[in-house]
Length: 299
Image (tube, rainbow, N blue to C red):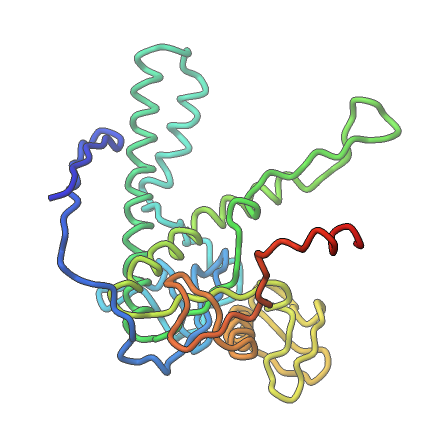
C-alpha cells in the first residue's frame, strides 16, 4: 500500500487505498486494426461511427448501448430524466422551492441542502458508472478510439452580456437562457468524464485515445464521392441531409464518421497514451541552438 485517502461525499465517508497491482501498461491492443470515431452529444451521450448509441436511456441488463436509432421527436424524449429517477426529478424542484423560502443559516436550510446534495451524489455516481461501462466497451472492442478535441470548460461558459449602445446601463438579448440550457445538457451527459474514463481504461487494453479538430464534423457530408461542407445540411439535431448529393443519415453518426475520417486522413497522431508505435511527429523539428552573434547582428 502506498497511500490512503479519506473523503466525505454528502453524508458518506470513504477511504481509498493506492496499491501497486503489478500490472504494466499494455502497449498493443488485441484488435489494433479496429478504429472507431465517437461523437459526443447533448441528446445521446456518445454515438460511434459504427452506428452504436450509448446513453442511459438505452441502459439495460445487457449493456448501455443500442443500435436502434432513437426517435428524433421531442415528445418521445419527455421521459428522458438524465441520471435522475422519476421520484428524484419530482422531489428536487420541491426542495429547491423550500430552500428559497428558508432562512439563511437556519437548521432547516442546512437539512434541505443536505437532501439536495444527496440527490446530486446519486446522479454523480450513476454518471460515473455509465462512463466507466461505456469506456470499458469501447476500449475492449477497438484498438483506436477517436474523439473530437472539445474543451468542455470553454463550451460551458456563460453567455457574455451585450451592452445596449443606445441605453447606458441596459443590455441587449444575448441568448442567455438557451446557452444555460445547453451548458446543463453538456455537463449532465458527462463529456469530460467519458474522456477521462477512456484514458484510464486504455492503459489496461492498449487502446490509443486520439483527438482530432472538432470544426465542421457535423456539417461535412460523409459520402466518399461528396465531402461537401454546408451548415444547411444539418437540418435538425438528428437529421443530416446533404444539400449537394442528397445523402441522408443520422447527424450524430455523420459526426462520428467524420471524426474517424479526419484521423485517417491525418495518419497517426499524438494520443492520450503517448505516441503509438511507428508514429511520426508531424510538426517540423525546432532547433534549440542559439544563433551566432554575427547572424543576430545581421538580422
